Length: 245
Image 1: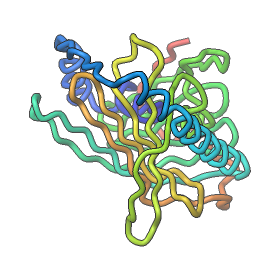
Image 2: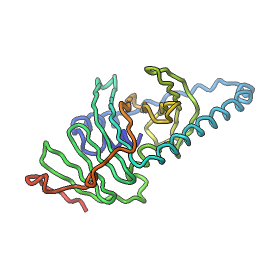
Image 3: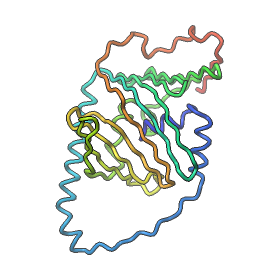
Image 4: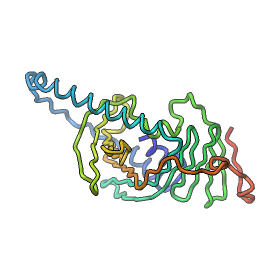
């Protein structure tokens, strides 16, 4: 989810941001909860649910350990946003390179570089670079480790369906936010059972908006340039440098 929020909330696409904001501003109809399960059924199913939760937690732990074992990660992805009521259906592609607490993200014509201390948002269309500091202690700060391990807190989870995607066994884990203020209804996290890599993430909002992030390519321990995560101002001589801090 953090990666999805990261993509849509950081001046990447103004038109899409306006549409998303309009969706978020719409009143959310409160659905009547139908509680018809008998207490005996709950008691009988409790043991199996607990077992599912443990399996889900174990799989998520494996994903986290696998991700932390790499020196760097390079991902090509597809991002889709859909809301039938608002007639929004948009697909975009991008890529992100991550190493330690640094990253370079290319998405919808915009490049974001985080060198570990500052974020540089480069917008060629506006010929502008926005520079801002990042507080690692801020829970809302976006860092590579948070992008791929967001699921470690703030959710209830259990094993969901298994799908065969082009010969790959994808196990889905359903995550439900524990905060009532969260505008997301649920998240489905698809994990490749063999590699323990995240295949996709499907987020459904309470307002009907569905966003899907699909990993098309997942490469690790790639040869990177020394200046991979360094902003070089000389490359943008005519750009306006907007320093926020």
